Length: 563
Ligand SMILES: [Zn+2]
Image (cartoon, rainbow, N blue to C red; front, side):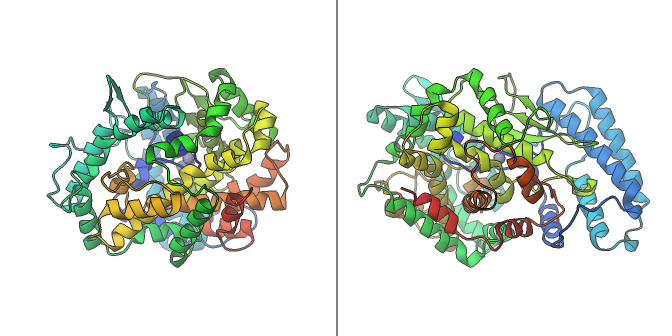
């Protein structure tokens, strides 16, 4: 992946018609444990400050301006790489700015610093080690590729890290080469077809074509499967699911409340669903009616025009905010949509990378999500040390979806597309992906709690009891999210993100008014309350101050219960 830290990811709509985000960020995920923990600790000890953004203060003025220039040069280099136009000059400039930063940092007497300045220095040192690594001639900022699997499905032997790497490598290979009849499709294409294909027998064939993906994790499904051994080794190394609990807590969700809240959301979904079981291959189709009905109104040419008009109607003119787009298909381009800093000094210039060959509601939802990240970045107003975003956390992904989720509102559909689907179909489009992610988050939590349990049994019970999906304990169809292997606990981010999105959207409507059909004062109101902080304040403080209290599931339950 090209852009490294600072990027953010595509919404899950790409997968199966829901909100929230779908990919794990390599930049942070691949950090050595100490660095990742260091960042978490730095953010955790940020004071619950209020009032205007701190300005550059004397003790750090020189080093902070060197930091701003080094960051900016690296942003420009990363964007050049992602755009396929990297050149030696950009790399040399980035390395030169980095050297000056290292020199400036060498002159700082850290013992003389306290409070905000001490934290600013720590953040800059961490960024130097994590994001501003020297650029080596001939190399790109691509992370190291995973080990090539010797066998696929992998054998279940070896230590935790090597087993994880082998399962993930096999998963990566399997999910991009899936034979369906005479075609070879990838996993995301199959998800898209499952939502769009009218013939149920064809949907079943497409769904069962995912079997090699399931096998890459669960082998033959026996007690000796690679995933089951991975879970056993994971709990031995780190009892409990501390990763998911830490993420949730940082966003303001008490760890003890996680599971009961998610179960309440799933029960609310169930209560709004007909009392019959559906096949798993029909799930995506059942929730895809909004997309099937409205996609014909969104040509490829209208995609960017709609994106521009929607944000323009909210007072967020994309040209004025210096948002750049790279949306054309290109050989060798990163297949995942993401947004990143393309420049940071003197002003922030967000860049959006995605690839669109067609229009359609799902692609529009994704583009609105990425543009949500871009207008967030463009609004950051804080000292250079904190001019970054807590990317890949539930809050960042939630605020990106505040506008994007409106594509499921009938009023929004009428305003922008001149047609609409009934509210019930819109809500199924909005929440179908979210409740499935919640089921995955609970599945992982239960597996970590009972490593000897049969994963097919746990998945079958969750999806039957809450999603009304017919049990198929003979199919390991839970085994198609790479995060379950590669980033234990990450699925909980999606679940927590969904709670935050609903709460933030409800609060905006309460405090400022409805915005689904446009409101030219919206951006100027939201930016200083949600977007401007960068790393200056803890996520939890920003969220709780904005909501006027702690996070709760009340907003998502209310939205889900609309009839
Ligand atoms: Zn995102």
